[in-house]
Image 1 (spheres, rainbow, N blue to C red):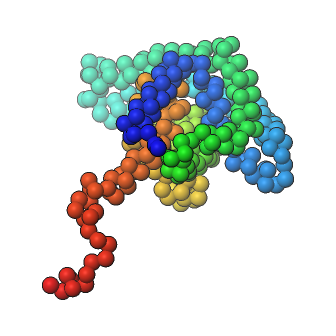
Image 2: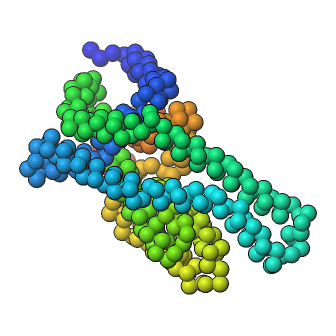
Image 3: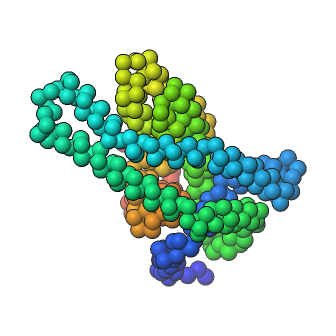
Length: 364
């Protein structure tokens, strides 16, 4: 005999509370494990495909690890130094950009930007704030990233943990399946399948879209000679997972930089605009339909709320788990709505009506 619903809610509620408490108390400790689980989840289909090609699971894991190591080394040597340098230069150049904007506005609207005008003072304050706060933020982030603990975590712990998780991923899933409550196992499996499909579409598909578009934007902007093209392309690609936000933020940043750098050379400014126009066309008509699908089940507003809420409550670890938790809650919410619409609470007396209605009733 199954436990009463009240007792089940009590046990599952306690388990959820313990999980959230551990996430809050042990955020820094479990960070490498959360990162490793995310990477292993993304790479599991690749390992499954290599197994279909005849490799064993451990051989497939070794191949993936070697390829990932080569790509990481190439990225670390070729991309990261340039990205950091351009980001630092962009922060330091911000006051000059603001001054150029002041000069332009002064030439066009001299009445609005005299020495005592509020707008001129505001622009000057914005430039100083970007330089001071942006420099502090960037230096703090670099100092944190270069600390010994973080280096060990990123370069040693995460790859090692990911290797073992990827090698035993299917076995772990099977073990979790054996521990499911027997009465609810079919429903949990169905919900887990829906959650996996949503995450696969969003994380794997949208992650691939972000990588492709970020590379395209960065390469295109650097080819046209934009000074901070790599930074602008990286920002646009990283924010692409929120629909339209990546293109808007990256596009405005790139076009703004192009206006200052190429003022008067309209063909280069048009080239920057064309890069983002082509990127949006390719994303909307080729990448997203084929890699993400037409229905992911994660509304942008719900996603932004989850990232903000979990980031505020649990820090960086919370932001990492926000997407899977949001996907899970979305699937559970849709399941609950379906159950409600099939219940007597929603259908009322209709739920007691016979399925087959006498045709003579329609004739009366």
